[in-house]
Length: 110
Length: 115
Image (cartoon, rainbow over all chains, first blue to last red; front, side, top):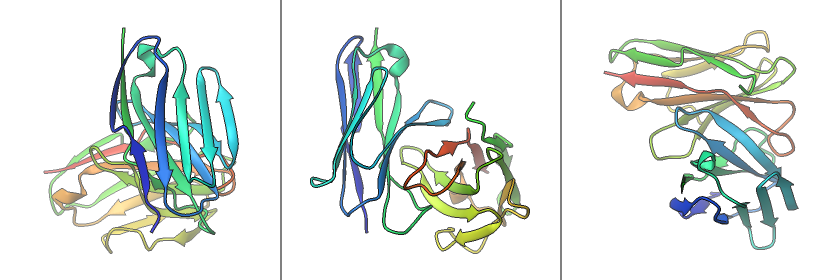
């Protein structure tokens, strides 16, 4: 069974701080997704990774396949970054079955 | 707005009633997914379609849950004889191709409260 663990569960930061959210998984995967969920439910896909590193604006996502670990970094954090960040993985031949972590609730204070 | 729309956004129903949720995916997407999310938890996979074919349904929570995508476009998720434990948010998502190589686009979710 593939487990996806995220840490921390909750994170409070001051505006401008550098933020790191971690995700670990237990079996080989074919892709890892970082998602952002705002209050009210809507989920937005931030990154889809299968190796290496991706950057979009102030967001950076990295993945280490050997260590089965990924990180999401936010530079120069802002209150509008406050949301739940969810790591999800797809693995093996399953094209539809994303396994989700429980999410990291981020609150950025002004 | 991701382009995936769900309705109704909120539904309150009495225990024992049937409810149906609709999802309209991004038009060119052949994959459509249904997930359930309860408070404090990540989404939980229920089922998915490639075009009109339901390729995985073993994760549907019970035989009270069923999903269709009759013409390979919109999809419906029906819950029969609702129970209080069915209260959750039901999320739909779509993608062109599979989850392992493509961005998945999520709807805003449909909140179900069973009283």
